[in-house]
Amino acid sequence: MTPKISFRDVVKTYELKDTTFTALDHVSLDVADREFLTVVGPSGCGKSTLLSMAAGLLEPSAGQVLVDDAPVTGPGPDRGVIFQQYALFPWLTVRHNVEFGLRIASTPAPERRERAERAIELVGLGDFADALPKTLSGGMKQRCAIARAYAVNPQVMLMDEPFGALDALTRVQLQDQLLTTWSQEQRTVMFITHDVDEAVCLASRRVVVMAARPGRVHAVIDVDLPYPRTEDVRLSPEFTRIRNEVWHAVYHQNLTTTAA
Amino acid sequence: MTVITAPEKKSAQPPGRRGGRSAARSLVLGLVALVFGLVVWALASRGVEHLPGPAGVATEAGRMISDGMLFDDALASLRRVFTGFALGVVLAVPVGFLMGWYPVARGLIEPYIQFFRTIPPLALIPLAIVLMGIGETPKIFVIFLAAFMSCVVAAFQGVVDVDRTLINAARVLGASDRTIFLKVVIPASTPFILVGMRIGLGSCWATVVAAELIGAQEGLGYRMQNASTYYLMSQIFVALIAIGVLGLVMDRLLLRAERRLTNWQERR
Image 1 (tube, rainbow over the protein chains, first blue to last red):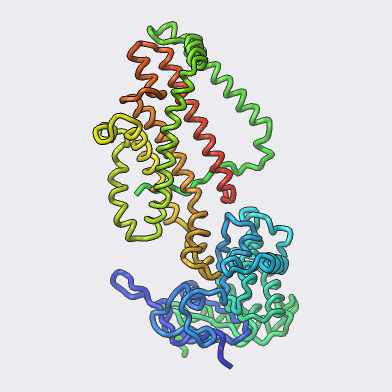
Image 2: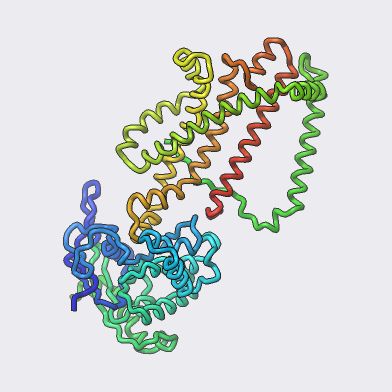
């Protein structure tokens, strides 16, 4: 089966004044169709850079990024992107933010309204459809951003530390909500985070651990946890074992690298 | 380049705290200040030679209103301001957008903007009169220039300051450059433009009065010039007060429009 997203020998370098900075060093990684893949790593490991390439917002310096076997040439509505900073249009209400992509796609008004309505209900913002973003809490803003991405019905969701700025409680709520939606719709998700628990809890099959300077894939750790990922699962010994393995891979990279 | 910081207003107080009581209090304090000022003025006019008192100025104001002179003068000044201001804004917004959006346009236009910004529009009046005669054209031209300079920088800054994440968010939803410009860049830079317009209007109002001091047949500036020639001190005061009041009213109206149009902004 061909992977949904495929990074092949991807290199990203930036020319600085007198040196070349390597953000990504020959990264190869496949995201399977309908997989929920999480990528975790220390800051500076290039995990967001990787995601931006899949989104078409950045070009690799060398190598290839393929979505459905076709090279990515730019952003497109087939790939929804969620940013850490929410990136809602502050002058538009929740409803109009969610309708933004549908208007671009010239979706006829009745269908547009209906799809926006559905996406807003899905993330539980029904009572706030006509509110401006400034009146929403951080968690609600991110839910609105998720609804905006869902509305255009992308095949892939690219999420760049979407819950990074939220408090722990809100984060867990949104994680649960995201998992519920994912298990219903089974879109392909690539989810970037620096939170090990989040990475383990959300990953359907694999957690990718990246290393920094230069950014590269350090380890791919299998996750075999049952669904639904309830609180019991989060507290199970198996969860703890995987979590420790990922934690070790993220925070003791130097030791493992020298050992290997 | 002058940096216009994102407009932030401190009106974030919850409605309860700025309720009726504090509004009433500031009204009372304002009235007290006004009465105090009038008393000081009245006392000063007794001590200082040639300085008219409030009563004399009020009488003169009544006369100037009833014979329509004040109205005609104010109208003449306002007409010049609005014509120049409108022309300036209408040209400045697209030029500022062009500069913010296309680096080539910025490179070509910015040196001129930077140079002419350092010249007060008023300094061009002698030249404008030689080139354009003594009619309305040179006056409107310098007012136009005053508005243009404030707004062009604001519009430019607004475009440059648009949050990259918002542009990316639009791009990943499939927006073309045209859509991004119309649906993201323009709304995101309106707060900047409106601030530029307010600064521009203030500068236009200052410019019109000064422009009218030089060769005009009507207008508040002309009225003062004329009154000083004939030693009509009260008339000078009436014109001065009218200039202040009209300037204040225009500023408040634009501020209100600004608040309404940029109500979506997060206020810190």
